[in-house]
Image 1 (cartoon, helix red, strand yellow):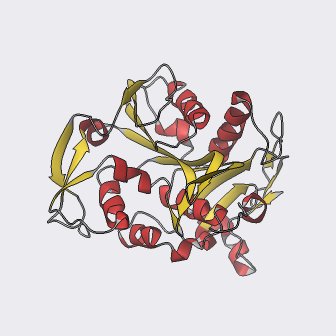
Image 2 (image 1 turned 45 degrees about the vertical axis):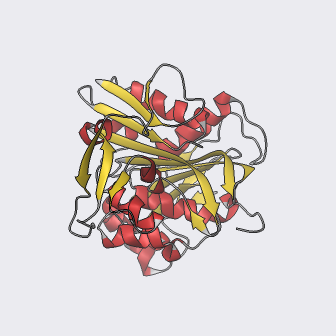
Length: 301
């Protein structure tokens, strides 16, 4: 199981990897069955999970934690991974989708708490959030009203955005793998829950709202996946986690894991246009499992 920068990389592109690696988004992709491997560039050895299990097997909290922590370990940048992003004086927000896997959120929380930040807040409408963290429901949170930032944002639309999100030092977006009617809903789409359009009555598509909202505080880290994928509202057990300091890269891989071409996902193309990152898998450094072996293969996506 070798990791590679991209499925499409060939020839001279591989020679250039060492020169371009510092600026390349790295995404850790880990199935619950991960049996170790080697980084395609640099030869770093990846150890097997402590208790590998089939991708459709029921997992314990410890097994989900191991899978998530390994994805985070491999999902880094040249400056370091998730732990490196957090300092003692930071206020950290974990933005978790309502369907996020609680065990994945707990694992992310353990990494954050291990850095002893000043404050940690979980902004989420999860039915069963992890214990030991302040939880803020985005629907009832103290909010501020303002237009979305950025030169490409729609200046005639105002949003109500939680103060916790606007004022935090670091934001981590956690979402399940989910797709409905061909539209994936991943870490960037998460932001639709925290930025409520208030003017005018007609605000455009979900993609426009999501990308406007993402601009209020671009996530410093993203984790997608868990023990369930949601396809047209149906939960399907599929144990995989992808993690990256680039939410666009994480969502690109998430779309690929759902069997979709990330370059054809409108939200990801909007993210590229606004300068949030490149969703092209050919410029993403994948580490851990390969896309083909980690991909969900249900009928009807």
